[in-house]
Image 1: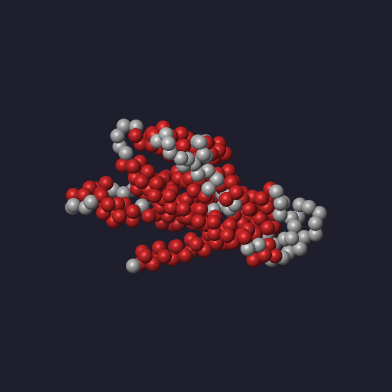
Image 2: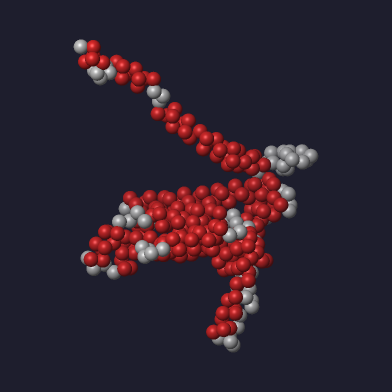
Length: 304
């Protein structure tokens, strides 16, 4: 009887006691997320809050000037109207860069997702990640050797047509877009590749077997199913592009004045941190408004 009693399962009271001693799920989840949110607070939120406070000051607290809180810095677009043109130019560069990254990135990701022969996929991945492995400054300066008058493009053209003129377009807005596309294209490719790799090949094969042309499969199946990757890549591309300053300054020359270069000048040359911070947060507000608008359009489209 003692042996039988020892082998009996624990009673319901004992089980309830063990369950009551367990920590609630929200406590364990919070403990696991604490290091991540702690790091985000120290590395992201506190610096952003400091810059946001600077944007309402007449001077930074690092000097000896008296500090007065004011909204004057946020009137920069009214007091200095040229900033409106600079902001529009920055947004247009961001739109064109995102557009070309979306087109090139989608088809590159499609080729990567469909590549199954030998080491083709590994080679393509290495080629895609190459911009991440090179110094950004070196990468941008290398484009000056390609796009300038008498550069690599002109050399190749003159080999084909010796009497042709120059096609160099350095120090133009298209040159800025080329440099930005080269730098941010991998983000679009990787996000689209993740979305395309989840599509079952049987769906595509069924569409072809039912007589669908390749453009129908592209428009009706691949693009809608890859939309989350395209949207994520657009966000990862557009947001940093409109604030970039290295590519516009080097590849744009005198026409490369963007919000990124203006903000950089306020922090590094004019030492007007409040104005630089206010321009940064104004640009951030515009970006959030744009994405809020497009998110509403996407929601209405999905409901329809």
